[in-house]
Every structure is written in C-alpha cells, then in structure tokens.
Amino acid sequence: MTTIAFIGLGNMGSPMAQRLLAAGHRVRGFDLSEDAKARLTTAGGASFGSPAEAVSGATVVILMLPNSDVVESVITSPEVTAALAVNTLVIDMGSSEPMRSKDLEQRLRTHNIRFVDAPVSGGVIGAENGTLTVMAGGDEQDLAEAGDVLDVFGTVKRAGQVGAGHAAKALNNLMSATHLLVSSEAILAGQSFGVEPELLLQIVNGSSGKSGSTENKWPNFILPRSYNSGFTLRLMLKDMKIAIDLADQVHAASRLSHAAVKLWEEAAEALPESADHTEIARWVAETSQE
Ligand code: NAD
Image 1 (tube, protein in one colour):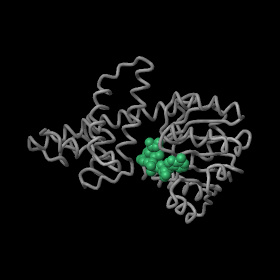
Image 2 (cartoon, rainbow, N blue to C red):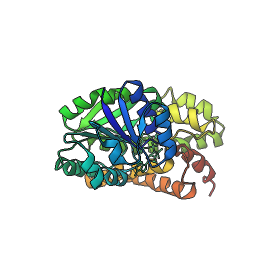
Image 3 (cartoon, rainbow, N blue to C red):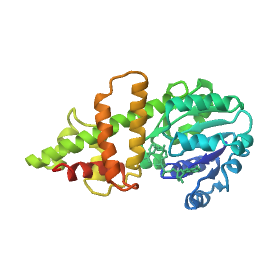
Image 4 (cartoon, rainbow, N blue to C red):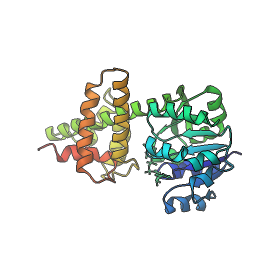
C-alpha cells in the first residue's frame, strides 16, 4: 500500500483517485473545488485544505491539473516544496508541456524530489475502467517504482526520458483532433451527397479511413448529440498548441497541423467555455454554409 497525494480531482482525477482507493492505496486529495473533494471523501479518501497538507506524509504525488502553469504553481510553491519529503516521486499525469516538464524535473531535483511525466489517453470512461494508455517519460528506475501505482490506471508505455510522455500525449491529441476535424468535414459532405452518417461510418470503420474519431467519438458522443465525452474543446486546443510548438521547436513540418489549430481556435472562440471537444463536429456543420 502506498500513500499517495492526488491533486486535481476533476473529470479525470476523480475516477483515477477512486481506482487507487479500490486497489488498496491511501489517497490524500486536494482540489480547489469543494465538490471534487467531497467526491473523494465519499469514496474513502481523505481531503485537505491545501496542497501542502495533502502532500505531507505521501511518498508519491500525482498531479492531474489543467496545464503546466497550474502544475508549476502548485508543486513549486514554497509551502508545498517544504512539505514534500526528500525522495518523493512526483508524477504529472495531466497533459503538460514537454519542455517545461524537463525544466521542472531539474528544479525539483535541487530539492531532492524526483519527477516523471505520465499523461494518459482514453478519456473519462478509460479512467473509470482502468483502461487508459499511460505515456510515461522519466528515469527507468523511477518509472519501475511507479509501476504499482500506474498499472492501476491501464497500460503503461515508456516513451523515453522526462518530457517524452508529455510529447507523446500532445502529438497523439494533435492527430486525434485533426482526425476529428476531417471526419466532421467528410461526414458532412457525405450527408449532403446522400450518404447517411451511420452508413458512412460503418463503411469507413471497415476501411482505411477509420480512427478513434470514427470508431468512438462519432458513434458515442456526436451521432447521439450528447457531446458529453468529459474532455473540453479548450483542453484539446491546449494540447494541439503544445504539439505544434514542439514541432516548431524541432523544425518538423507542421503545415496541416497549423491549419487544423486555426480552425479549432475559431471554434473555441465561437463556443462556450464548457463546450465538449466533440462539439467541433456540430460547429463544422453549422459554419459550413458561411
Ligand atoms: P478538469 O478541468 O475536469 O479537472 C481539473 C481539476 O483541477 C479541476 O477539478 C480543478 O478544480 C482543479 N484545479 C485547477 N487548478 C487547481 C489548483 N491550483 N489546485 C488544485 N486543483 C486545481 O480537467 P480534466 O478533464 O480532468 O483534465 C485534467 C488534465 O488531464 C488536463 O491536462 C487534460 O488535458 C488531461 N486529460 C483529460 C482527458 C479527458 O478526457 N478529460 C483525457 C486525457 C487527459
């Protein structure tokens, strides 16, 4: 049994913390939201009034926060740094910026705190069922040690040194978002020509155009018009921008990626802040005649 501090108990963090509890670990949680903390307490965890209190006595700290700004503000605050025991393993499981994760690892190392990145793919349903793909970056020994904890969430794949997990995650989401956008345009064109979306999806899913969008997002969230995947459009756009920044930093071609980001930006401006990322399909249809 490991004592784990879990900071960020939102759409993903809440079911992930519950899986740790079900696997027999002790969970000490913190979130800005009282509702989120109450969910953890109901599930058998302990919640605290500050991140510093939550990390006291923990050997592993998991962060499931919106972005690198929030991650850094939480984990490098003087109160938290002082409360972390020497040799604590900090695991950033959110989708953060790879270059900043590398810097953060160095900064924490000066306090004798270890850091690995382990972002995930698979959505809220994957978090609930323990079927996430965990994309890990960091020292091999640290990741082996984190195995007992990370295995609870799904399948762990090591991408390389610190930052490589975050790079893999951003690039995965760039592909996922671009597939979702082009499938939205293609399905709309098919429908206008007279091929029903359900039928086109059936055909594509047995052919070479299939993707996570055609196999999962269209049938589960877009065709039923529920748009409730639990992953917001703004978080997806953040990940796409991380990926194109990375491509620019390493001078890799990214013309299509930049074009896709521009369209997602337009959608983000037009839709409310809470919009689900699958609403991009609705936005494509609604703006197609403009
Ligand atoms: P979310 O907005 O539902 O949850 C984030 C939580 O962090 C919220 O509960 C919020 O109150 C809390 N928070 C924000 N600032 C805080 C602070 N300073 N201290 C403590 N708590 C704070 O987001 P989410 O969908 O759970 O995503 C979390 C991360 O995981 C993001 O990086 C996202 O890109 C990534 N991700 C999300 C999904 C998904 O399907 N939702 C899938 C894979 C990865």
